[in-house]
Length: 139
Image (cartoon, rainbow, N blue to C red; front, side, top):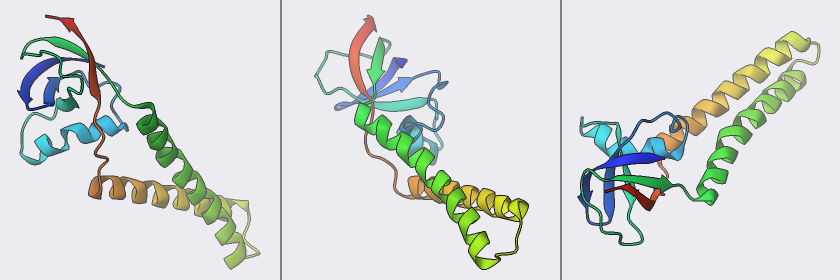
């Protein structure tokens, strides 16, 4: 993701970005602190791990660790799928005469319940990993 440096505080660099690819990504949490303070949520926080000489106005490219992306994908997909399966199976156990429609509805309810639980837990305990700056594109 590319962004223009807005400000720098130690090794944390705040970038103004077009947030097209961030929906559902851990990068959503990058701006959490700024949203809570009522400031510009279009700014994300990234780390300058390599100690590059940066200044406001420069355009940089960031990268998110692959481990973080895999973790995010698993947390986004597996719990809702498990919620659907659990809801479908639980409806069959609680009411053996229920048809596929009722079991499907219970599965969908389980899917939404598990999805909401993941969302609530991510809001309560956000991921602390941030993208890091890999290169300066424009001085």
